[in-house]
Each structure stands twice: as structure tokens, then as C-alpha cells.
Image (tube, rainbow, N blue to C red; front, side, top):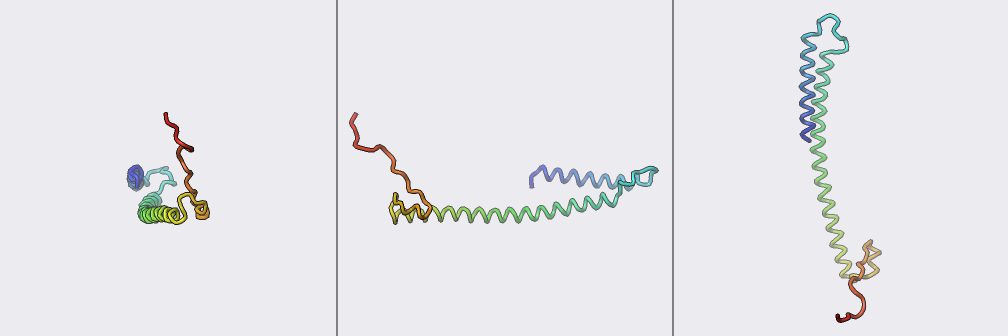
Length: 118
């Protein structure tokens, strides 16, 4: 998890804890806002911690699945390149039959015609 998210989580968890402690101390005062309840704040903190734990577990699984995918992708690219070279050696480097396999035969390069001395 990125450092920013860890810092943000720590700050929010601490703020919720401090807020709940303050509400516990001052909730008996007259005209204290009825909306601000200690149990709701503590429940929110617990939910935040549980969701973070779930996220970290799913992130670890996603990272592992990503590594498997990257390995399979690399193996696929290697297989395509190997098969292309095998087909080029079988049919010829510039054979038009290679188009049937999805490979574009390389164009001939270089200067055409006889060389002219300087």
C-alpha cells in the first residue's frame, strides 16, 4: 500500500479514537449535539480498520495474480516469436504464406540495381 494511504489511515484512526474519547468525557454537558455519539464513532473506526485489513488481503492477492499474468504474457510472447521464426525458416523469410499465420513478411531492404563506382 502506498505510504500516503498508510499515513492517511493512521491519522484518521487516531482522529476517530480521540473524537470518541472526547465525546465520552463531554457527552453529559448541556446542549451537547445529539448527532455526535461515541458508539457510532467507535463503530466507524472498527469498520475503517476491518476494511483496511480486507483491502490489504485483496491487494496481496491481486499482486500475486498480476505476477502470474505477467509470467503467462511473457511466455506467450516468447512462444509467438519462436513459432514465427520456425515458420519463417520453413516457408522462407519473405513467403506470402506467412500472412495466413498473421505475420507480415519483412520487406527487402537496401539499394536496388547494380552498384555504381564513385
